[in-house]
Amino acid sequence: MITIDALPYEFRFEPESTAIVSIDMQRDFIEPGGFGATLGNDIRHVAAIVPKVAALLAWGRALGLTIVHTREAHLPDLSDCPPAKRLRGNPKIRIGDPGPMGRLLVRGEPGNQIVPQVAPLPGELVVDKPGKGAFYATALGAMLEAHGIKRLIVCGVTTEVCVQTTLREANDRGYECLLVEDAAASYFPQFHAQTLEMLRSQGGIVCWTAPLSTLLPVTLEMEVRS
Ligand code: C5J
View 1: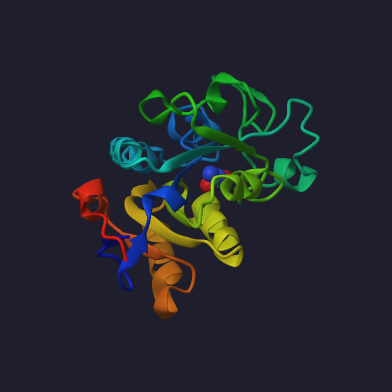
View 2: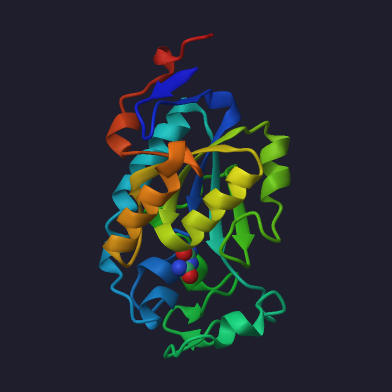
């Protein structure tokens, strides 16, 4: 068992039953011209975490954790995109419309690819999800069960939307989750900070949180059998 100094108290995990879930680190959210930018957001806040997510993934790979990547992605015919989702708001271009990186939030398009610095390695799990939560209408639950996963270490974008929704879904399914504070981001720094507060409040009602600096010094040699 490995112990991490976290909030609201220590988070304990075993590498063989723990997965890193890297949420939606795709060009659509992080690069100019993608879905995030077309909604009028300042992408600098989310682009800034790419090196942190890369460091977290390298750490997890060294520890032998299962690695899962998600992408918010719709089928080309948009049959998995509710009209309410596509038509909401007043963006310059909508889900499925052609943009500078191909059709917005559509599977297989250039904008839907994970940014190269944090891209999946061969053998890692990739989940295309039509919703904000990674468990909704995907095989994620079955994949985690097949790998014997009990705990999730979560990072990605955006903190208050897909990251938070996935953490709440995971919590309701019985997973113990740690959100890596500075390997997640929002377009709105105040939403990021407030989401961390609410998720770990009331004794960790949804999850634990910890900065990357508390994880990186942890090595396999520190694992203590109990
Ligand atoms: C959003 C996400 N913000 N990945 N998606 O629409 O958080």
